[in-house]
Structures are given as C-alpha cells and as structure tokens.
Image (cartoon, rainbow, N blue to C red; front, side):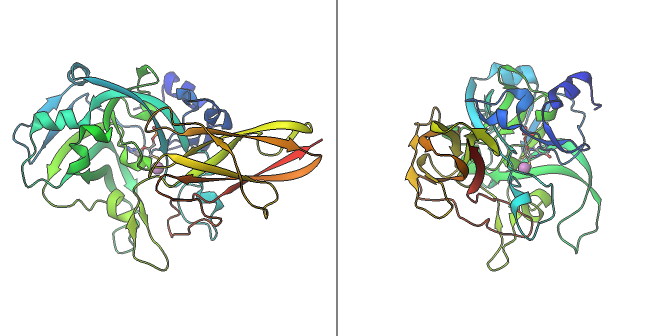
Length: 357
Ligand SMILES: Nc1nc2c(c(=O)[nH]1)N[C@H]1C(S)=C(S)[C@@H](COP(=O)(O)O)O[C@H]1N2
Ligand SMILES: [Mo]
C-alpha cells in the first residue's frame, strides 16, 4: 500500500520517530482531551503498510471455519468503547543504558473510541475445539526483521503474528473487539484498515492491526513477536512476556518547560493502568518532599485513562513537578525505570519543569 494523501494527512500533526515503517508519537495536545483525535493518535508499525484483501479468515481447531467481510462484521452486534492504547516501548528513551528499539519519548500513548464486533461473538460462531488453548492472530503486514535472538538468522522475512489465551478471547466480558471504526470513522490505514483487534488493558502490541487470520491452536504459539520481542529480558530474574500496561501518570498541564504566572494554578493530568482503576495520584514539588494527594476523577469507562487535578499555590522560581499514580491492585510507579534489555514497560515517575514568574 502506498502513502496516499489521506495517509499523509493523518501523519502531519504527529512527532515522527521513524519515516518507514512510519512510527510517530502523539503531540502533547493528544493527551489533553478525554479522547485523542485520530490525527493526533500515536502510530506504531513494525512493517510497511500492507495490502489487505478485505477478508478475515477464522480457522484452525474450530468446528465451523469462517470467512468474514467488513459487512459481515458490521452485521454482528456492535460495541463502542474508549480504550487507552500504550506501546510497551513508550518511555524507552529515558532508560539507561539506552536499550535497542524505537527511541520513544513518552507519547506513544493515546485514547480513541473504538467500535467493532466482539471477538467472543466471532469465536462463538466458529466453535473452538475443546483442546484449543490459544488464538493465533495474524496481521497482513510482513517484512525483513531483526530477530531478537542472536541464534536466529538475521533479517528474515516475517509476518506480524501474536497469540492470546483462548479464555479471554472467548469471554464477551473481556472487552476485546475486532474494531472497524475509530472515533466514529472507518479505520485509517495506519491504524489497521479494514479491521484490527483492540485488546483493553494490554500493552498495544496485543491489538493486531490489518487482522487477516484468526486460528485456534492447540499448542502455545512461539512467534518472534510473542517470545522474541515484547518480552521483559530482566538482567537479574527470569524473562517475562509483556502483558498489561503498567500504572502511570502524566502531567498534561502546565506543559514541560512552560512559564506560568504566580498564584493558584491547576495542575492537570492523565493516569492509566492495565491492572486496575487509578485510586490515587500524588504530586510532589521538590523531588524530595512527600506526595500530596491530587483529586482523581472516576473512570468514564473501564478501559480508558482517568483525569486528575491539583490546586497549586505557585510561587516565583523554577519548580520540578512530579506525579505518581497508584492503581486498585496496589501497584505504584517506581522512581527508577525498571531496566530490561529491550526497554519495555518504563512507567517511572516523570518530572515536569515549570518557571513561575
Ligand atoms: N499487524 C500489526 N499490528 C500491530 C503492530 C504491527 O506492527 N503490525 N504494532 C503493534 C504495536 S507494537 C502497537 S503499540 C500498536 C499501535 O497501534 P496504533 O498504531 O493504532 O497506535 O499496534 C500493534 N498492532
Ligand atoms: Mo508497541
């Protein structure tokens, strides 16, 4: 697929990390509103934009294999929900030593309204076999790829494939969609046209774009994007697959390096986690003092970031503002990025510098 005018328009307002395949962060404005406008939503693609023949094939260990078109998916009951997607590599640039991989700052995170069919409804029609354990999810994109294992041959041509356990995939309550609309419009090419998975709470690698095949499999899947990349390669403990988004807060206002007048200022931000609703956000001003509680708004939906705010008596001088979130599982942001070889899951507390005049 080529870069059409529509694709170029969708890319214009983003902060580019890499031109081909196109990878780009949201601008700070993409995090200030309740949901991120499509043209401000970050883009992360491992390969060039693929061709897609418009058919979703559902097979493997199923009683009733399916071939579904976009219209077939639209005929199923539709669900629309806001979902925060974050790349597992978000914040990699702040890790030391700097891991290999796309040098994401902090803005590979966005929230859109996604509409589609429930994955569980599609699987119910296909009728998985009793010995099915996982669902293999294949995108239409492929290309040369630097494999993470040095034992493998470098730069093989591989396809983007992920798997997930069959239990959540078959659970209508898990909120997993085969999405065909984003913010009320058909998907843009960069976001997976004609349809993609949207897996709430998980780092967005699970949300396979340009979805082409779903196969029920009877052995766990071990593809490059499952067991090579998207794995926490810890220096001091066993490797673990990347799964849920780690708890994180972001100050959205004032902007980093802003100058603001002295007086009462409202500090605003977002906070999100894949392991539970945000229960607390603390704000700290010197880098040393304790954490003062911010007001955390209740979640507007089960899968989206939450707003928080703090009334600040801003006195003249340079201030370092930090925000730290805690979620319902009791997980809290660390002070130091949790270093791992491929640089995933950096949810360390961030600092915003503000000059008050
Ligand atoms: N087919 C396919 N799906 C994919 C990817 C990809 O490279 N190919 N990248 C994944 C990763 S790592 C992320 S962070 C999200 C990004 O989704 P977005 O570009 O819509 O923001 O898509 C996921 N789905
Ligand atoms: Mo990602």
